[in-house]
Every structure is written in C-alpha cells, then in structure tokens.
Length: 127
Image (cartoon, rainbow, N blue to C red; front, side, top):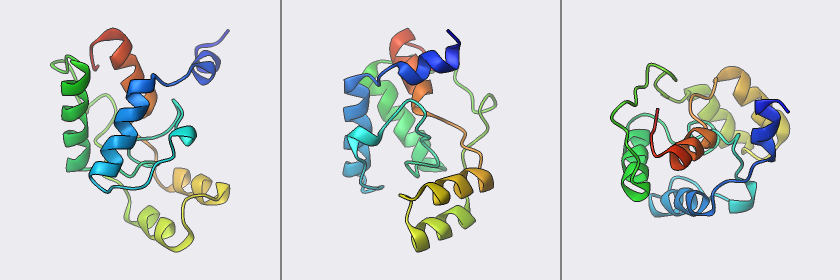
C-alpha cells in the first residue's frame, strides 16, 4: 500500500482535531467544521493561518502536545505567506465550492498540512 493511500485512510488524532477547532474559534480565524478536517487539510490555505499567525499556532501546538520543535525550520516547507488573490476569491465566492478550492490551489501552493502536525504528535518532534 502506498504511503499517500495509507495517509488518506488514517484518521486525525481526536485531540489534534479539537486543538485546531478550538484555536480557530478562540482567535476568530474562521469557523471550522471538525468533520471536514482531514490529514490533507492545509493549515495556511484551507484554515487561513499564515504569516505571523502560523508561528503563534505552532508555538501553542508545541506547548499543548509537548512537541520538540528545536529542529524545525521553514526552509523545508517554505514560509506560508498567504495570497491576496486567494483572499479576494474567498471573500467574493466563499470557500465551499470545489471550483473555488481548485482555483485557490492553483494560485497558491499550500505549504503546511494537518498531516505534518499528526506526524509530530506521533513522533514527539516537529521536523
């Protein structure tokens, strides 16, 4: 079984799902449906956590799950800056339609996904 297929079949850790929903609600980032979260959900594109907010998000994540982030570097992923054009498209059309999601993914390549957080929860290290 390929790694990608295995990841798609895997479920998100319940505490991780709860943390993401709680974080987005607490900081009024966006309303997140816990049932719509998957390992393929992008932190920067789908949840709209980018720039300095993602550093705060990762700091709280590391503190809550006691993750070692000493070896973490954005060089591996590329720093998530967001996209002004994607924000305009989301504001005008919303982000529920599949064509809006496809267009957004074409305009902005997601940098960081929930699967990266799940791996950190399992290993205890954010790499």
